[in-house]
Image 1 (cartoon, rainbow, N blue to C red):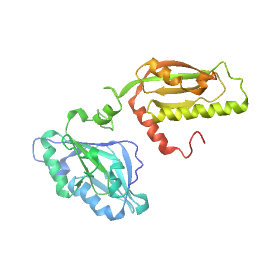
Image 2 (image 1 turned 30 degrees about the horizontal axis):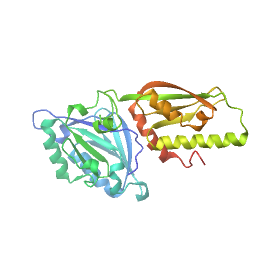
Image 3 (image 1 turned 90 degrees about the vertical axis):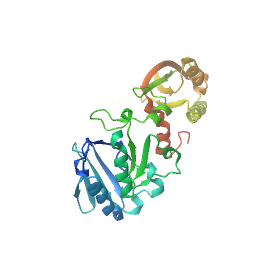
Image 4 (image 1 turned 45 degrees about the horizontal axis):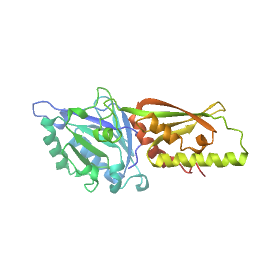
Length: 289
């Protein structure tokens, strides 16, 4: 299943104390998303979202729009098999987070299980522990995460769910932030070197960048446009200026005096820890080619 969404969809089940039917449930979603699925899944998708969860469905020739309270919708577009993830890849798809009050968690879980939605890939380690969260996939392959902790509730009006596991993995504080060390790379005193030697030095500089990135110390690096004295930056995932200085000094261009550095502590989003992984999937060529 391919998706055009780059965000997490959040569904909030608000259940009262009286008995309710699926059409009474308030499922809030204020954004829009598009999901590619097989046409053979159409009846099951309409049954799950319509009859089982009580959502209004607007059908088109090759798509169904499932509407939610708050004005949002998910558009299921029926595509050829080549444009849809197979079942072994469902864990890579867009995650739909269902937040259910603890008092109703078991009841909602039963409704979904009775429909026939299976546990999501129990052989994948991150989905094995259902102590706090329950993972499953519904028709079309969309991934669901059922949670009942108030700590994971989204903030009012915001379309995401707090992910404690990833926050811990990336070293995020309560604000989703962490400390990095910036290295500002500036024009050094020794720039007047032969062209061939300069090319070799530049290649060694890039090789060192790749090494630091592979070691997980260098999160981001890149040059500035133009020909000013400020040439580029490094962003290090290290605790101290001293460690960042020792890493920067491994740069052959720093050693040769072609570049000089200035280090600063910086407070930024812990999401930067994903940049290197994402970047590797986007490059056709190595920077050293």
